[in-house]
Figure 1 (tube, rainbow, N blue to C red):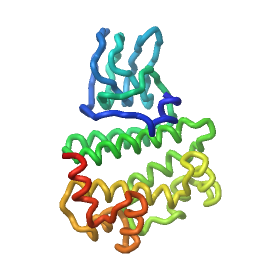
Figure 2: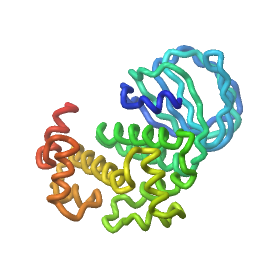
Figure 3: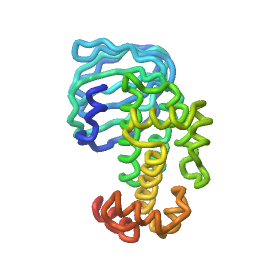
Figure 4: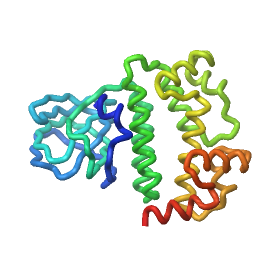
Length: 253
């Protein structure tokens, strides 16, 4: 999965479904399932035999199973959130324990909620790419253990226009310089740049899926200056937000 995450910008996929699955004790055989699955184990344990590899999936573990594979799984009473994907060009089954169970659960729960709310495909794909990006950061050998606390705090507060670097430092129990180093090592971005990226992704999804004004999208995503917001959107997406919604909808029709 580490190789998959470090090259996720090259991944091609479509989202088929997102769901919460509860399993009883039992052994199941699956033959050449026609779609891939990315899952987070919430509770309980499951033992997988996939293409000659054995995986024990425990709470907090993320598992990827590509399409077309035969596999066997033995469940205890357990629960997981699963994303079903098609046309995914990564073909190796992998499992990884990231050591950030609460943070990862928030990310998977957000994706599940957006799916159940029938959000725009831009929003859903943004959720998946954001999840893969954060998994890649957590997978790095030098990832700061406190980074997960900071990312979780950002996830819950990034729309708050009053959010400051000092708030993130308190959430991570670290200094500004240490936090900046952790972000640069993991994302190649400063905390401020990372926050801006999240706000722009949200604003883009709002403009694409809803007929709302630029001002409304800016304020909903945590911007207080509409002109600054417009400049940032144009720098990132190549078009001003005033036409982004129409262009985004046409791209998905």
